[in-house]
Image (cartoon, rainbow, N blue to C red; front, side, top):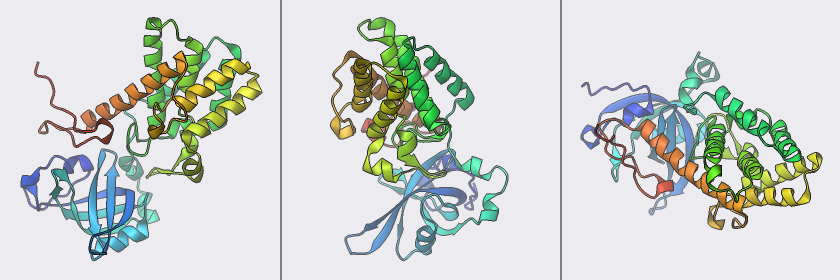
Length: 330
């Protein structure tokens, strides 16, 4: 293999191992995260996450590197052309960037360029939205159904495009739509096992639990939290959306209180963002399904981004360790 590599995507980079250290590469990437930090000697450096449609990786750029000023001027969300060398830090890919340039507006207009840089859900978004609409129509209680429909009418198309997180799970375009649909499917499958759970209330809670994320997150190529997202968070924002729609739909007070509780408690633990602990059958049910799909979403993404030569993924923060990605022999 030539030492002069020209790689088109992050997945290509992740095919290499420590034995490939020093091999050169070039690629088009998005600056997904850019955090200025201070080293023990007082010098400033950037902790950078770069990515494209196929995945992302992290690297460090020190203040004396010519790339430092390019990153500073571009900022999060900028599309850059980078050149560098394959390198690893503590067993994880951490390429050394040697040169970088920010693409101009004209270059960004090249056909298909932005689509190659934005990671999307693997399932067809139109099909997922059709399922969501069917789940809404399936809610038998009329005021509850009207409440759910009212929230989706207010947030509009943003729900179809939004990610479900900045980095933890379903953190890509249509990720919120995918996560919510998967939860609704799980709800439908599990409800027969738990007759104590009200099916309409559980489904309404699942459909609305993360709608606040359409306000919490912003950005086209790089996701970050909005002003309201930082000051209030998606739990409170979702509670506000549900309450407003419920008042308009004249949802009975007891059902409204129970629906609000599902949204306020769905994160499970206060340190994970829950306002309260789940204290109704429906709230416990929704919180557990949310946790299940969040973790399985991490698993699914790691498997999609794995290659045949790797036995384990990189450490997944949400799972507190790496994932065995090697397929079971058949």
